[in-house]
Amino acid sequence: MAAYRQQKNCEADGLFVVEGVKMAGEALRSGWTIRTLCTTSEALTSLRDVDIRAGELYQASPEQIDRLSSLRTPQGIWMLVERERPLEASQSRSDDFILMLDGIQDPGNMGTILRTADWFGVRMVICSQGTVSCYNPKVVQASMGAIFRTRVIYCDLAETITQYAAEGYTAYGAMLDGDDAFASPKVKPSLLVIGNEGHGISEEVSAVVGHRLTIPNIGGTCESLNAAVATAILMSEFYR
Image (tube, rainbow, N blue to C red):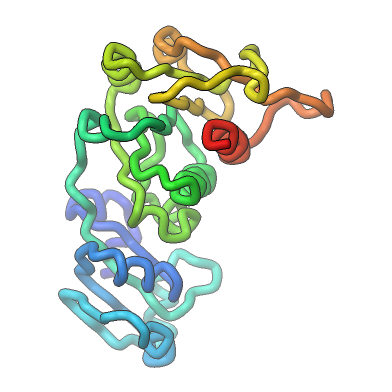
């Protein structure tokens, strides 16, 4: 099992790692397939309110869990969960608001964005191929369970935006030179595109985004906002 500390092995076997009491509870309640559950006897008592179901269940010592864990403070539970079968972008057409991510790289940002999408009830997030994997352990932890409720699709983003636009969706992109996001009207069904932390939205994707939005820099001192923070502010505007 120690081999699954390496992402390439998880990828090859269609698995991802889940750690900690809260995340284990989220996984067990989600209905996703739990391949392996390793837990200390003490941590197991924390899951008494959920149905413990796993292909393989092992009682381990704290030291064994520590050797498997990538957390600074392991919580006595380590799991292998089967990845869901990827969906096509066309399967999200029923939503009137779709969040799109173009090259988000920081796992913490990615997980926080998924958590924010979950808060607003967004059940589908579409990503460029260059966006960090939603199954990265740091993404999974930062999502705080949203990974089990929000489907993530990876595709050619520019092509997908063009397809959506042909079906009546309006594409909005978060850009520093855009119109005031608080004053600009938003038309649904809509797409909101968030770009890479350092470089923003790529030229290819920018070329097919019809409306550029910016969050006014009222303080006038910071160069930019954190990508996850900007996503939360803009999503709040779309749902306001």
